[in-house]
Image (cartoon, rainbow, N blue to C red):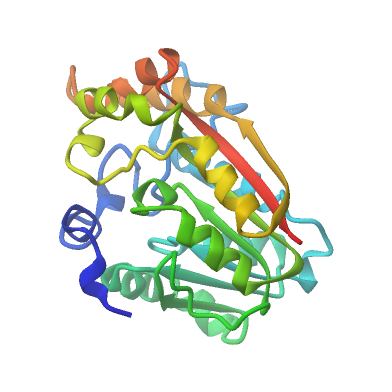
Length: 269
């Protein structure tokens, strides 16, 4: 795989920038979190980490059991804490974290060295792109991605690759934020720095679900979980980032209907 394909903003943010260390994420995980049941009166760094773990649990719970028979891949695994959580808490047969950024794969192997030593045949971290996954056709029972698809330049190739590597009946689970349509891309770029500099791409939800159907998936379902993400995140950011910081605009963008956070599931025909 040609790693020069990594967009400059993605290379910087997840390379030298090491986004996981930003105060807004509280270390390790890199997602906006599922804040259900968390007291957001004065959220702590521990609450922030808990929200991120909960988002993984929400995604992983979408796979049908028995878990010990399922071989999964996480696309866009970052530092790999989510893949380690999947193995530790859900007891899947095997979990492979895939990331396009060599620095992230190296970090994942370092951060999770004990888990890798404990489960050498069940946990791994490898290089790969969403549209060029390093697996044989039909070799996986499940593919999931947690808040990474907004960085993919396009989702059609991701849908096709997920369909290729999944066995018939295998499941894809994706959660991230999607735009309400192509017409809002410019407004998102004005409101949010990550869209302006090209780190995030304004993928319309309807286009992605259509890609999944075209790739051979059935039972495509999307569930809005924005109410469990944006208010809690913004409450945490209030005490974490400077007043007026652009990240505070995620909440008004959601309230204005420009974007929403979704959990998408689909089954390979």
